[in-house]
Image (cartoon, rainbow, N blue to C red):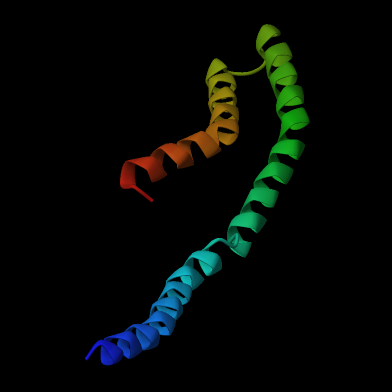
Length: 102
């Protein structure tokens, strides 16, 4: 009887080992970065790199035109809000994802 119990333990050890390995495999597979996320992050950083000098020049031009009374203040406020949205988009996305638990 004791011998049968020892054989059962010897046979169950490889099964436990295989189960542990199979349980660890999804963790290894899910640890990889998503290619979509990598590409989206690169695109976001490129757009922000191009948008920074354009936004600076736009604010300077809008300020000069508003100072000379050649443009409506609504256009200036709209442009500044657009710039704030463009540069604040990652924070807005993180906020929305946090709201929905994604």
